[in-house]
Image (cartoon, rainbow, N blue to C red; front, side, top):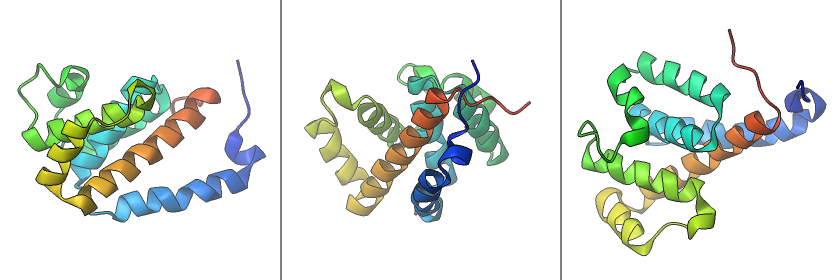
Length: 145
């Protein structure tokens, strides 16, 4: 079913989110970390539009198809670093916030691994992609062909 184009109907809503995305893009997060966050959150949220966009972006930045294919099973795939596993777990716990939020153990491990600033940037990156996912899924945003 065709739904509204939120950005045409409420352009100020789009304009309000752009600075958040601009912040994420200018953050210290590596391109790999940004795309892993975006892809994993989009998998959880079932956002085909964002999955299409961010898997393509990740490959442009040098991510391998194998790691992208196995991202949904990152715990079993031995292709991800310990740092990436922490980021993926944070992404999952933030995205599925209703399951209790970020555990104290994970939070402590993340701060010890990355420091407060990098963890703050991971959290904001998760918030941003979850916002975009919710817009795209709610409005049935079509995949570019």
